[in-house]
Length: 71
Image (cartoon, rainbow, N blue to C red; front, side, top):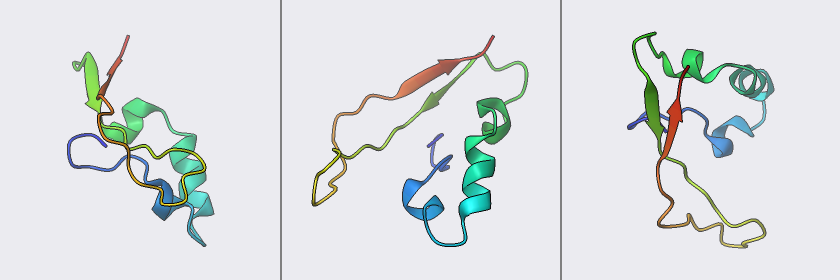
């Protein structure tokens, strides 16, 4: 997520009929996906994670934001 905007949403993009959209997102550069202009030096992303093999697939708490720098 960038702010409140989802960049990649696993649950939706793994649904039937979403194969082309998923491939497009995964093959895109972060700059293009986020609509970043050339002046921005970084973007903060919020990651949502679950533990692999967790039957309940509860979202993990305490995952820090990730800052991606552009060169």
